[in-house]
Amino acid sequence: MLINHDTRCALDAVVDLVNTAAPGPDGMVREGLADLPSLRGFVERNDVSGVGDLRERDLAAVRAVRDRFAEVFGAKDTADAAELLNAMVAEAGTTPRLTDHDGYDWHVHYFAPGASVAEHLAADGGMALAFLVVAGERERLRRCEAPDCGRAFVDLSRNRSRRYCDGRTCGNRLHVAAYRARRKGAAG
Image (tube, rainbow, N blue to C red; front, side):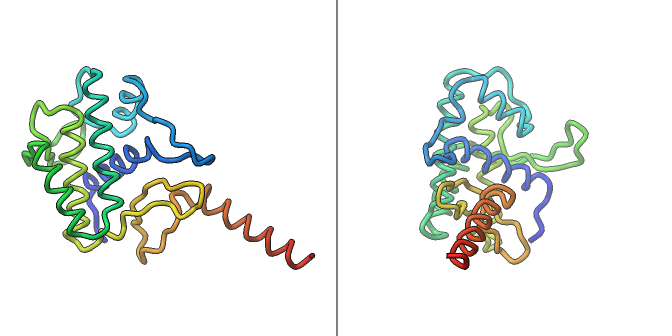
């Protein structure tokens, strides 16, 4: 599947946002957007452009957008995902426009000029997820299969076979545990 740079960045931001409320290794959900500095860190980590001063209302609004993106990842079918995305993108006041800022070549922003950070995330992230739905690739929106994880990810592997949010942590941990169990069973 061919995904352009902007769509990939928006998908990465959506996943990062959803995972700010994902369970940790102990199964407990910790709030990753606990305060304004953590929201500022999210904005900087994801190079969200055009964000000015952040206020408490921005924090609450971004958390609400996060919850809606999580609903898209958990949608029972494509029609439900499309309905959720349509509502989110419409409410964000989506206004597609061409831009070439910060050293990037021409690309499309979907958020309206002067949009809040939540509207920006809802518009750009919602459109990126919509592109997956339109391409018939909604099944690429996944949750980690590690029993103690559940983090969101977008499976961009060629054969859609990715099962874990991170093969070096969750995948490796489960493979090592299975190996040890096999060795114990063979020795026992």
